[in-house]
Image (cartoon, rainbow, N blue to C red; front, side):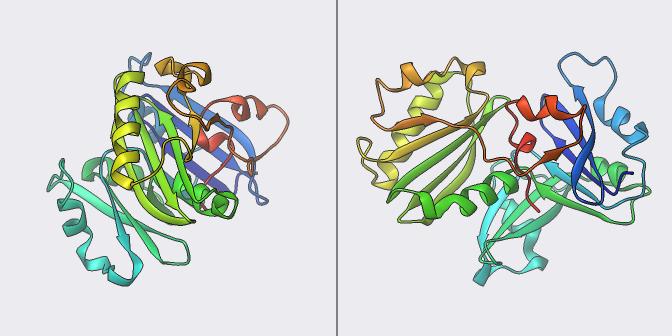
Amino acid sequence: MVSYLSLFLYEEIRILLAKDINHKVVAVHTWNLLSSSEKPISKIWKDELYRLDVPTKVFVHNKYLALVPGALFNPEYLDIYLSFTDEFSAELKSFHTSLDSNNIQLVGGMDERLFQLLSDGKKQLSFHHGSSSFLSYCLAEKAKFLSQEILIYLFDKSFYLAAFDKETLKLFNRFEIENKENLLEYLFGLTEQLGFDRKYCRYNVFGNSYHFDFSEKWAQDYFKNINFESFKNIQNYHPGTESFANTVYLESNWEFS
């Protein structure tokens, strides 16, 4: 029996996880945007699983995000926080997620028409920026970090980057790239901007690195301490659904809750 739903909206794929009362995955539906002839959102909206009226979380991986310190946060100013992003639109529907015991608020936004479509018929629905899962993972692992630590999650033609100095978050953002050379330029520039030592800082790479031909062997020519990692697994699967656990997507192993 399905008790919970989690929908993840990437630019190239949509992923719907259905879970039982113990949050164990009982079904996985995916829609590949690169091969679909029908608009994927219409497929989701019609999907028999998504139409179930159970608690549902929607995670939106897009360029609309802003990180706000909890002490300065006011939920009435969500649109103002997003207005500082380069791509702000008045037609956005904004939302926020509390992290790190409310010390961090992650503000996100999405097209208002899409927001209304996905909300139709749902009584228990919450929206989160897709990066909330990655940032929650980084915060959960920070006790294991070196004094300088950078974590990177590669997906679509983008990546999230979290930088920590002595377990304190110094930078978190999303960047768009076309190839591994773009990624290298960002890592060089951000490392210097943060005042980190490239020979000492540990870099942890997660996600779809092969899409950019970004290999550990190639990267070691530029970084002394770089590791290609898998996310620690907190997702549990019923028999028949485990194949999704072997994908490169963050949500196959970890999810903000």
